[in-house]
Length: 110
Image 1: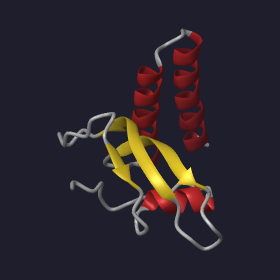
Image 2 (image 1 turned 135 degrees about the vertical axis):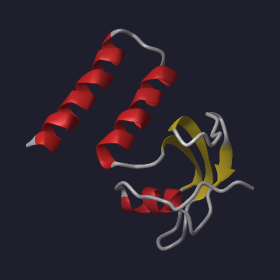
Image 3 (image 1 turned 180 degrees about the horizontal axis):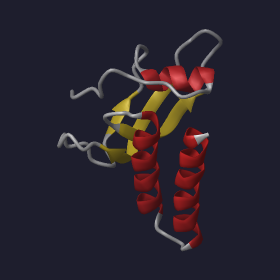
Image 4 (image 1 turned 120 degrees about the vertical axis):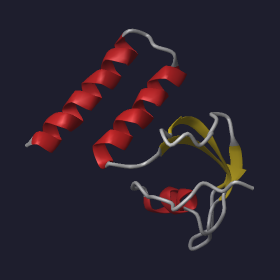
């Protein structure tokens, strides 16, 4: 029951920001922070995925993903606006195919 209460409290905090007309960058930043705390992650990212075109069945999607917000208390610099092409082995293309949360061991640095 505690986990459900924590999830609802996180949703209320995000909804309160939206109700106060917070700018999207602030809302997404709070979403990244709340998610990290809820799932116990070292870092979380809110990504915007731009698909180049619909992928054929069984093919990985192509396009780019851009960081909209990040929670990274370790001090690693991950700036909103950073874009990368979708890599077939990364979590982002998997997420676009299976429509559920995924995780990746590391954000590519090159």
